[in-house]
Length: 370
Image 1 (tube, rainbow, N blue to C red):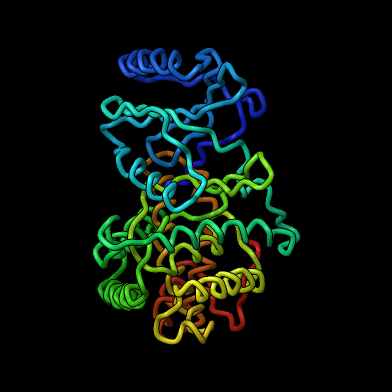
Image 2 (image 1 turned 180 degrees about the vertical axis):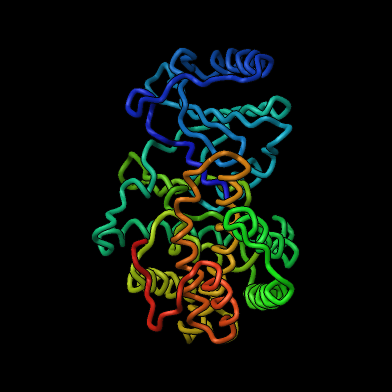
């Protein structure tokens, strides 16, 4: 999870400033590259300003053009960031009909990229949190992009979301959230319990059919177009894989930064299911005829994601000095407890989490705004 938003408001509107450079050599390399592309693309170098930071080492700048438009510049140090997956997935998404940044110039050796600008407002910024039903049109547009992406899927193109990757992600929870953040070292019995629960979660999720997975498909990474009739823009897709069909809808409706009442979550998920089954994406076991069966699979996938994200956000805080992410930890623990409390097979996980968090299980728990 990168939590990247390379289309934040311009400097003049958001108080952003010119970028700082800790490495003079990299600054010089950037200036040389920018001078070249500015001449080719009509850029105004003096307008360069910070657009957003990333949870990784990537940075994004916004720059104006002589014709009044703007562009996005990515600064991705090659020693820490590999931009090749970003370029590959951008091409796949564009071919699938999604609205993604068009790459205008890429200095692969230097780690600099010039892209089209998808706008200054994320879906998250325009959502009406107090009136869920007012957001149905926005979520319908998000489903348009998701279904187009899934329909384009082909095996062997993107890395597999396999058992090894799912397990590495889950291990972030005991390594970073429990041990480093909560200061809890599991004893032998607790470690065995968590291992059995992880094995069950992985097996359930790997049983789902595989499609292209964005892997962070949520309102912070969807851009509201400035032109009526344009599709939502899609960002932060460089970690895309080929894996469980349930992942991206779980990511969209169990957002890392936003919680909805369960009625609204089900409402949008049913709409996705109805559309997906008409496209043949639900031709698996009894999913085509039984929404409840599909819903259970989505919940199990969401559980894996939130165990992982709790670990990632703890790591961002403790290792990378970005404490704002861990402030959302209560949301993830609520998601985890909700799903673990709903399924008998996950009772050991619920007891383990409750023991660590000092909480108690409640029957009839539903999604709420955390």
